[in-house]
Amino acid sequence: MAVPGQLTFARRLGPATRLAIWLVIGVACVVLDVRYRAMEGLRSGLSLTLHPVRVALRAPGDVASEIAGFFTRHRLLQQERDALAAERSRLALTANTARDLQRENDELRALLAMRTRPGQQLVRAALLYQGHDWFGQKIVLDRGASDGLRNGLPVVDASGLLGQVSRVYPGSSEVNLVTSPGQLTPVMIERTGQRGLVAGLGQGRLELRYMPSQTDVRVGDRLVTSGIDRVYPAAVPVARVTRIGRPQAGPYLRIEGRPLAGLERSRAVLILVAQPVTVQP
Amino acid sequence: MSMPRETGSWGRVLGTLALAVGLTQLPWSGWALIVRPDFLLVTVLFWVLHRPERIGFGAAFTLGLLADFQDGAVFGQHAIAYVLAVYAVLYLRLRLLQFDPLRQAAQMFPILLAAQLTVLLVGWLAVRPPVGLAILLPVLSSTVLWLLIALWQRAWHGKGMRGAE
Image (cartoon, rainbow over all chains, first blue to last red; front, side, top):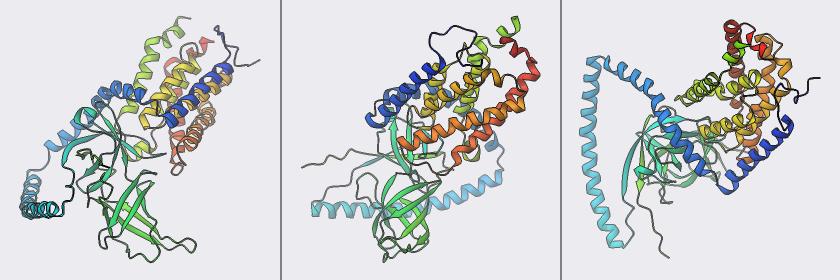
């Protein structure tokens, strides 16, 4: 008779009993993790153990791209250099204006006795690993608590907001992408200044929620962070509106957008480390 | 009897498990990530089928926790699924060992599917509804991986592994 207990070695407990025990432990793990956040220690341990492996296994890809880079055509490099030089001079002009505006802004804020915006510091990081996005998209970066990161910091790349740091380990950190379901970002429509809330839909899409049906919004509008939450700095590009639906039932528009940051492409990102805001009563 | 002992040596078991962990750690992205087979589950089930005295529930659970960490998922999500799959393989073990690679892979498909559906269900209950059904794609690739491993094993060892009975 092919019963599971009929194996050639001695076991004190039958497979069904063992299964039951392990299932109870498994459910306990889930509950401890979801309800009580009690498994972060184990996560840190695994992260420390696996970090060298991940770094080592990223090396072949890096070497390949290094070699490919070596054989880049000379003329291509020259063209790129010229383009960059032009870009740089243009940016220098903008930076001058920005510095001027910053000074003016500081003075005005001082006059108005307003709190200055928290100072910011940039931490450069590289993409280390990307997980499955079945329940929420996450990426792992190669910087962690030792570089001054903490939960909740915004992560950007050259073209826009990428997400928010959700877990910090000693040498690496996990980032919730802006398109991850359940991830909320306070934004405003750049053209009109109307504020709203962007929520991730998964699969590289996001949605602008709770916009009344008479809202002035068009396809192609840019959504930028509003900065009112003091988590994200103001005016970081987040998404571009791709579709506007007007459902018959319900008071709100269905506004979908595509993220501007290269969520799938970016390998080098920046983390904006702001001084912790102390709220005085 | 010397051959089975050799094929299932601790070195080989641990080596293949380490290889599976390593393969999962590679920086997968895009389509490759979506259809990436579940190396850990396939390896665990392979050894449960052929060396149940070495690899069992405990190892499956531990590697499941590792898979959970990997995806930044809830701890226990993959662990529960792996443990259930190990039970299914233990239950059907004598039957599975009788089939040629293709049929064996076909029989593994429902087990792998059940494991993935468990991951889906636990995630659904513990976190939120999943995004799309892409979660089921790795089942296909895992089955193909199983077929390849079974073919390779038959080519390499003949029917030697069945001598472990």
